[in-house]
Picture (cartoon, rainbow, N blue to C red):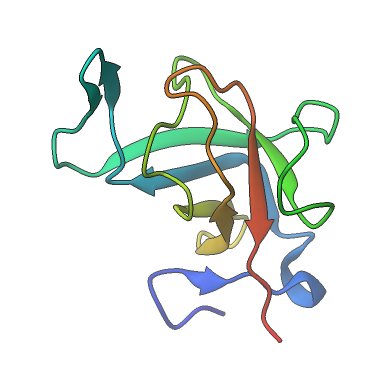
Length: 122
């Protein structure tokens, strides 16, 4: 049971309880790109995600530890400054778990899959 707003992922006790179709990342990164560079509103942005297959993802710079996630619906992409953003997933217990951190981000507004590095309790 979580005692915080979001538990940290523990694969030994949580892997069968996570709803990988109900995940999201949050970030204050850029929300667009203009000819003069990235733009931002200064508000927290959220992108709905679901776990994909590793064939959905391009190779992650961090190697095989990364898991692939894809956007849900019209939540298309990430942008500059989003690397390291937390990725949360719902659990069937009603709690939320911090599953991982967004790996490096490619082109702003064009990514169709994301590499996420799981945060694991040790």
